[in-house]
Length: 162
Length: 248
Image (cartoon, rainbow over the protein chains, first blue to last red):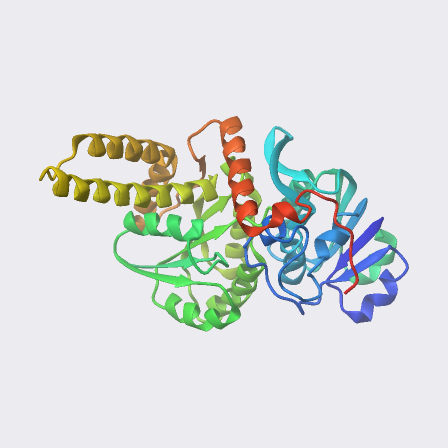
C-alpha cells in the first residue's frame, strides 16, 4: 500500500491524485498531539480526539511506501505535516526493542519498505543535510528498510518525483 | 540578566519537561520567567516576555525525531517577532525522549540551530536527555520517599517518642542516593549549562541519560507501560493487534 501525506494545497491536488492508495491531507484542520500515550495504553492505534486524524496511525501503519510531501521548515517537516506524524505514533506499540543498535518501539504493523520525503520551498545546504538525517532517523524509528529525500525547487516538479 | 524558560510539553501537569525545567532554573540564577506553551493562545504572552530577555531556554519532548508540532507553530511566529523587534537572544534547548539514548535528540537540536540562523538569534547549545519519562518518575518516587519518612517519623513519635527512627532514615538515605545517582548525568550537564546561560556563552550540544544499563531500562519501560495500560484498559482492547481502519 502506498500512502501520501501532503501539505500542498488543493491547487496541486491534480499532481497527486491517482499516485497512491491513500492521501492524507495535512491541511492543519486537526488538533495537536496531547502526549497522553492513549493510542498505546487506552485505545490502541486510535486517538481520543475525534477529528480527521483519529485513526491516522491505522492508515500510515499499513503503508509499504510512505511519501511525505512537505514544505521545508528549519530542515524539518512543516507544522501541518509534523502534526500528522505526531498523531501517528500508534503505528508502533509501547513495547521496546533494539533497531540499529538503539532502543525503539516494536512495530504494530511489521516492517515497511520506503520512507520518502519530497521537500519544496527555499532551503539551505545545512538544512538539506538535517533533512536527510531526519528521514534516516524516521525510517529507522518506524521500521522502514530505506529512506529517500528529494528536494524540489518548485512544487510543479512534483509529478516527476512521485 | 533575564532568562525565559519555555515548557513545550503539551501535557497539563507532571511532564518530564517541567521537571528538567525546574532543575535548570535552580542552576541558572538571575531573573527567570517560566511559561507554558501548549496552545496558540499562549503565543502572544510568551513573545511579550522575550522583550528585554537575554536568553530563552526551550524544554521540550522529542516527538517523532523532531520538535512537537505545536512548538514549531510557535517558533514560526517567534521568528517573525524577533526579526520585527530586532531581538538577538541566546537560545538554549533541553530535549528529552523516552528512549534511553540522549543522542536520539540530535535531529531536534539541528532544527533548533537552523531556526536560530533564520531568526537572527544565537544558537547556544543544549542538553539531550535519554530516559526522560523514567527520570520524571524518579522525582515522584523521591516525593513518595519523603512521605514515607514523614509517616514513619510520626509513628515513631507516637510509639516511642523518638523523632529520629534510625531504620526509616537509613532507608530514606539509601533510596534518595539511588535516585540521585540515576539523575547524576542530567544534573552535571544542567549545572554546566546554567554557567553558560549566566555568562551568555555557547554550551555545545551534550547528550546524557538515566544512569542505568540499557537492557535494564527496557525491562522497566515495558513494565511501566503494562501497568499504565492495565489501569487504562488498553490491555483488554487488542493492545498489540494490527488494528484495521474503521470508517466512522
